[in-house]
Length: 175
Ligand SMILES: CC(C)(COP(=O)(O)OP(=O)(O)OC[C@H]1O[C@@H](n2cnc3c(N)ncnc32)[C@H](O)[C@@H]1OP(=O)(O)O)[C@@H](O)C(=O)NCCC(=O)NCCS
Image 1 (cartoon, rainbow, N blue to C red):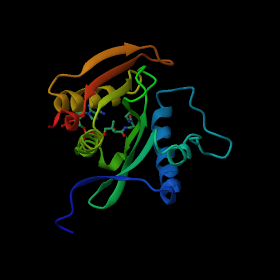
Image 2: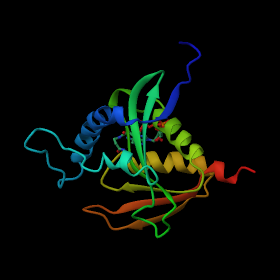
Image 3: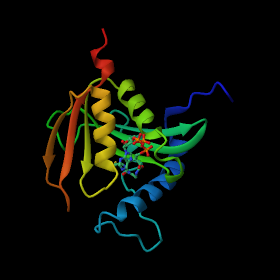
């Protein structure tokens, strides 16, 4: 469909939990290259035990699918409250993923901007230094989105340092 928006971010329904579980396997497999603590289960799956909470705690957890021209190409899991903040109301990007085939085409940037614009307030994004793509991706996207106004800090991680970005959603600045 020619008039379909390029990148869409849609709330994942409970019926889409198996789809998200499948995408989480791809995502965790990617992360397992950088984090030795991630172990494949005996059933050949990594698993993501907190996934059901994204529908049983709807006031604090928000699951999204990323679609490109209608096809699922990734996901974002967002929480209200962050391990990197004392403020229970900040938004935190818990997990974020774009399938390999679609990477470096701007999907991640467009999906992140949609996410931040949809949920007004202060955002926290955490990027492990051990994940080679994450820090360059988030620094580039957040610098552009926040106009350079994001605050950066570091916190210990296991086993790598974690860069923490904090910034306001553009939507929260609108009149
Ligand atoms: C990180 C990730 C989400 C990026 O998604 P993407 O759709 O490829 O990102 P974009 O194409 O929108 O990239 C935007 C900019 O970020 C930077 N960037 C993205 N991936 C990068 C990488 N691997 N290395 C260096 N810079 C990168 C670039 O500046 C890029 O702009 P450019 O392509 O014009 O140079 C994707 O690689 C991914 O899912 N990785 C595995 C999971 C993960 O690490 N998630 C993030 C941590 S939660």
